[in-house]
Image 1 (cartoon, rainbow, N blue to C red):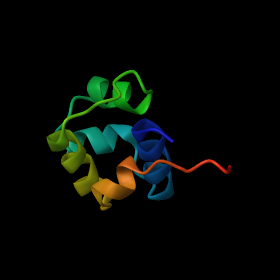
Image 2 (image 1 turned 120 degrees about the horizontal axis):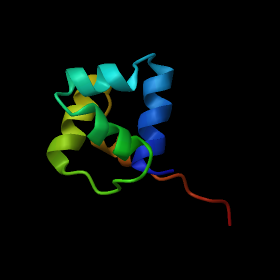
Image 3 (image 1 turned 90 degrees about the vertical axis):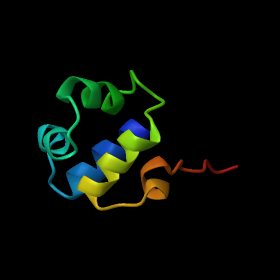
Image 4 (image 1 turned 180 degrees about the vertical axis):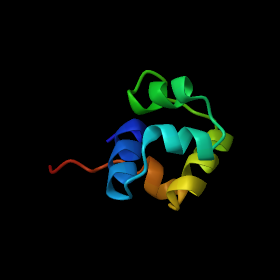
Length: 70
């Protein structure tokens, strides 16, 4: 899973809209949308911290990659 996929999943689990996440994280809605839609794949650590603060998750959980079965 990508960071964008994780943001979608976690925000849905916590019933936090992308608009709310952008507003509370002091991010532009368009930039966050690009991250969520995997158009921007390398957000800065500051951006990740803001997202994590609103979602109340660790950076590790946000950037976690699902391991595929071998």
